[in-house]
Image 1 (tube, rainbow, N blue to C red):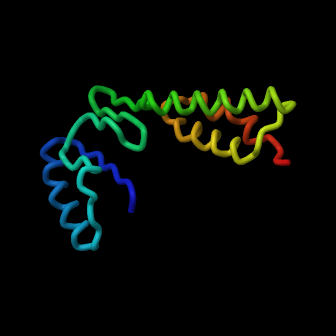
Image 2: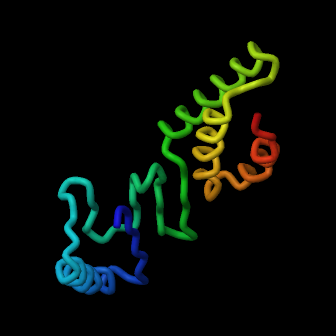
Length: 124
């Protein structure tokens, strides 16, 4: 298991759940990598797989700023290569970009619509 996020209704429930989760991990032979985890109950998780997740109010999921810059850089590289090579780009780069972009779909609902033509592009 690599990544796990558990949402519980209250702080008290989260504190009780923490004990159960730790026992279950130990009994299963799973270990946590100290320093990479956030095992203290919180309403705002600053960096979970490149997202900022807040359960305050109605809740909010946002993409981290560095992820936006990374995606923008990938898009610019593809656009420049497309302009140089008569609209042709390597399918590996196109797949990598579309995978990165689609991973942001929860925070950018139009990602699926805007990526449709990329997924429909024939591979040569």
